[in-house]
Image (tube, rainbow, N blue to C red; front, side, top):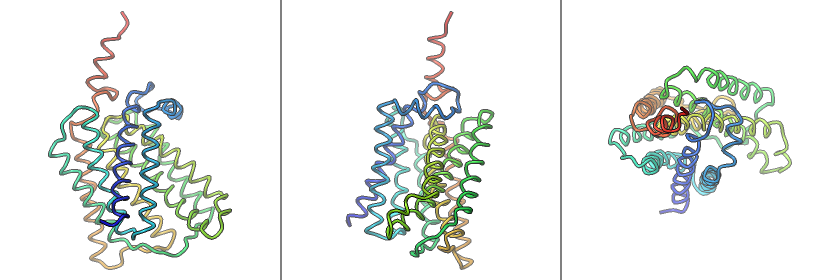
Length: 298
């Protein structure tokens, strides 16, 4: 097995492990069901959450190293295997069994996303993104995230998990698109890192992290992680196709196939959100309710 493939699978496992560890503290953190920015400051003081974050960084680094030795069309689909790792790890941490329906839904998400990624071309030219366009892109993404964050209190937990992860994944996908421009241009001149695009990438990344931790807080970890795995690369590919000139599926067959694979991935994600398997310590969960009753003041 070539080393890039090994690194890609190891990176997918590390990302899944790190996200599952982050969820453990996200559901236990104090505050409302949809926490504000101070929520991240609380998590930064939790050793297990920091270990999870380190695992996420390691996984992302391994993925990038794997990309240096193999084509994107080979490595990117391997990263989607992290969904099955995440489902199993979440079940182990919560001492629950992995349902057959979860595995089927997870495979559907993986198959759909891999199909979409393979049908999109991947350009190799140095990308260019005007600052004004980047500001509009980041502003629209953050604006949509703020709307969902403010209205999420009135949603049921499954819907809240999907929408928070959707806008969180979009923010992280936007970060990937901005980072693609910054890193590609920095290869020839490292001073290009000091740029407005870098600042926008950092802001959208932090905002995306806040939304994702709130999505994990619902207890629907598998659905939230699946939505992240779909939205992040799809938004990144869309930015490449429509803003960076990397192209999109041109033939009618490829376009129909991309829509079909997208529908498969979306259906699998919805199935994961409706599954009964969720973290029992999330706000409103069984163990959470037991603790509330146990420590209720008289």
